[in-house]
Length: 244
Image (spheres, rainbow, N blue to C red):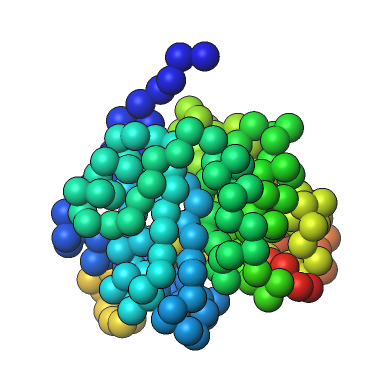
C-alpha cells in the first residue's frame, strides 16, 4: 500500500508554534497530571507521539527520561525541529519488543483508533509488555457515545474504528490488563467567569444545555440507570495498570 502523508491532516488542528504548544500543555496537565510518575527520572514512552506535543509537556513538567515514537516522518521532523526526543520507527510493535519492562508510564493518545481492528489487541499487548510490573498505560480514543461520535470517527480518514467504554475495556482486558479505569476525557472546561454573558460563558451554557439533552436521550433509550453512566465526551480516557 502506498504511504500517506498524515501530517497534511494533523497540521489542520495543530501547529508548531510555542503558543499552541503552551495551550495544549494546559490540556495535558489536566488530562495526564494525576497519572504521571512522581519520580522525574522515570522513563515515559509516548507511543504515536506526533509532533511531540505531549513530549513538550512532559519535558516542561520536569521529566528527564522521555521518548516518543511515531511512524510518520513529517510529524517526527516537526518534533525534532522543536528539540523534542521523537524517533521515527517503521514498525512500532517491533520497536516495543526491544523495550520490554522498561517504561514506568506509556502514553498512547489518539492512536489506537488508527490501528487495524485485527491488530489492536496485539498492539496493546506489546505496550503491556513494555511496562514495568507497576507501570501504567494512559490512553485516549474517540468516543462512539458522543453526539458528534460519527464525525469524530470519520473526520480522520486513517481512523479504523471508535470505541464505547465497553469495547475499550474489552480490548484492554484481552491484551492482559486487569485494573482498567475508563472515564470521559473532556475538551470543554468551565471558564472562570462562566456566569457572565461573554463568549466563554455563552459557550459553556450551550455546551451544558446540549449535553443535558444527550443525557436525557441516553436515559430514554437505555433506561435511567444505564443511561446515567454512559460517558458522553468526545474522547474516552483509559488508565490501565499492568500489575492489576
